[in-house]
Length: 536
Image 1 (cartoon, helix red, strand yellow):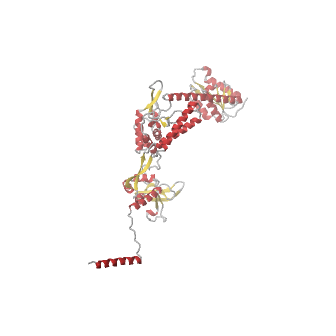
Image 2 (spheres, rainbow, N blue to C red):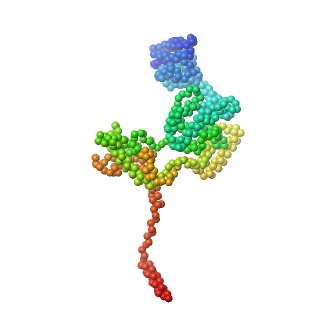
């Protein structure tokens, strides 16, 4: 009799209760008999899935799912036959690996399978090898089938990119992906709104409120698809998808489908490459968060001089209920004496300081500048060369004909790269341009919230301390430091340049005359007088 310190976990399953030969009762009885014979005295826990198909995943079977959550190291799991656990060799080997990782032993009553014995472990090793071999065969068959479907222009299956939809193949069996006019309008709107400055969260909320189906719902193909809302991630996936500019990703290589090194335009583009590039550039994460409703416009800018935390808005208490105060008392873990300042006083001080320090500089704004496509084409061509080299190393050009095709493609691509490199490149991207006005005009025109947004974007800080003498009345400028960081340094340099260009050149001072020069001038004057006297 074999002893075992763990728990015996008996799993029984039956797809249909009408089958008496493998009834739940018989499976349990046989399992308990084996447990009593080999592990007498060990506790037995029974897990039942009655009327549950073996084709379901383990996590979708109530009994088996509970067993997987409860088994422990040194436990024994008994099943009547292997097919009680899984219908396929793959599924069974997944269970074997899970049991090995958990330190649990699997035993089958009628299949002579027992992982507690050397023979059982050898059998499991052989089955694992067979399973992996069969799995690789299946992968190869699927890969070949998808390659054939892609070659003949048919849809290979999988998730449909938003903006496309399956349609019957016009030349025969199967389906192809065509442009989805309904989704294309949404894509057009999303890209336009992003390039106009709308946030992804705002766009997603608006689409959801208008009842427009999200990509997951729209492309589900089911009569009653599972609910899924619009999100910032869904917006980003759409904007970054190559399908919206007409390009296709090879389902096997996950690379752009190319011809002569350049992407092939498979579908009519919804937006241009330039519009997509601008939208992708605009999706960069913001540098600062805007204050929520109820917060002072200097929130995130006004800091405590003691703990460097944000000064928070509060009122002046019983004596000054209508006065807004910005205050910091530290945290519960690290409290400190109260640091406070009247919000109105600090606001006026900051407005005047910024206006005086950088008001004279030129106002600028960020705009997207479209360059030529030389850089993009060069990147694609070089990527295509890399792909050719990778494919060559992988043995995909083993035959003489394939090798000749490789050499021709490589030479043509290298020639095209040399031609593109000779063209001056103008990169696309966001640039800062002069608006033609002074910054003080813009600063005066802005609302307080707009001023706060600008200060947060420039990572400016306004640090406030208490007076050195408690309750002393000192000018705010003596206990407040406004730091505009690199922006102020750039502004100072620009102001100096402006001042230099606008100032008139001072008159050149003449050096004092020497005695000899004085005598020369005097003699010239005397000669002139003499000549005047000699005239008739």
